[in-house]
Image (cartoon, rainbow, N blue to C red):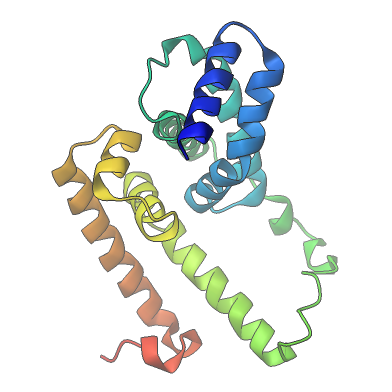
Length: 201
């Protein structure tokens, strides 16, 4: 672990001196984590891919400002801010997604489910996953980011505070409101939930 951190520190130092190969190695190390966070915040694969690319460009431009500490937290803060900026831009100038255009229903659809799932199980799982993502997507961006960082990515309160630039109390408050919002949202589709997770009225 220490050698991994030392290696990362060397890569960062090289990248700060203009070594593009070192920065590309850092991108390869973090791209899945960055995309996952962006996707959960943006609720759209294409927007998440754009935000991921923009975040790495921003990170490269701001690399001189990195002064040590958790590089992961520094990078995820840039990703979170990039997503916030994009969501604000979309709110000012809404666009129609390709899926919403006439003829989009002729798409071949998702890939075939794995052999171990029956078609009904695969359809239920896809519906549930979409319902959860829709509920997350309905949250305010700051609540959405905190929920994803905590319950999807597994970061603790202190790490989330560092990533989002918020204090601990704000993180806890946003997370509490986000969880309540998702719980209320999922109650509308409780028939999709496995029996043990259904919320009784």
